Length: 258
Image (cartoon, rainbow, N blue to C red; front, top):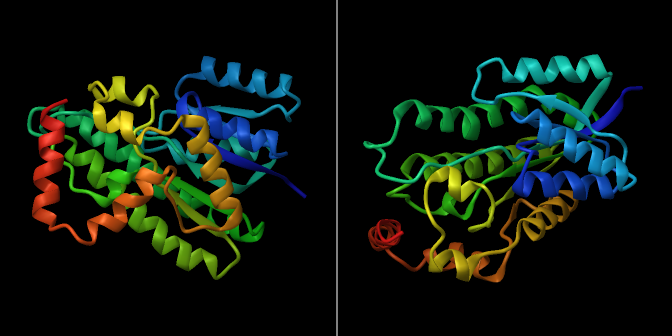
C-alpha cells in the first residue's frame, strides 16, 4: 500500500511554510511544492531535525501549464499518494488592472485558479480513496470587490465558490473540504504585490502561524470555511447589511490610500 502524503503548494514561505511544519508536527508525511528549491530543502531539513518524516521536495513553477503533470510524476516516482491536498500557493498584484503587466496578471490566474483547480480535480479520486481532506487558501478578499487588486480579489472569490461546491461534492464521499480565508498576514505577499500594509492590516492582522493552525484545525474538523481572527469573522456578517456599491467605494478608497 502506498504511503500517504499531505501535499502543500507554496510551501517555501509564509503561511505555506507554517502549514508544512504544523502538518508534520502532527504526524503527517508532507510533500512540499514551490519554485524555490533551496528554500524547500531548508524547510525539509528543519522538519526532519524537529523529528518529522523527511518531506518530499517537488520544485515546480505553478504558472506553467504542465505543473500538475510534474507533481503527479514526482509523486508516482516516490511511490506516494495524496490523502490531504493543501492549495496554498497564490500571489497578488497591487494597482489599477489596466496599468499592471498583463502577463503577470495572467500568471496570477494560472497560480490562484488554474493550478488550484487542476490539482483539486486531478487528485480528487485519491482524496476519496483515503477519505482525506482538501484545504484551499482563499482570503477575506473573496467576500469583497477589489478595485486596486481586481484580478486578485476575483481569483479568491473563485477559490471560495469552488471550495464550497467541492465541500458538497466530495463531502458525500467522506472528504473534508475547507476554504481558509485569512485577512492581511505579514508575509512576502505584500512586497510581491507591491504595497505597504496600512491601518486595515494592523487591525485585522493575524500571524501566519496562527492562520496556518486555524487552517489545519479547520480541515481536520471538516469545517466549510475558516476565518481566522475575530475581526475577519465579522466581515462576511456585516456585509449582509451594507450596500454593495458602498463596499466597492470604501475598498477603492482604502486601496488608493495605500
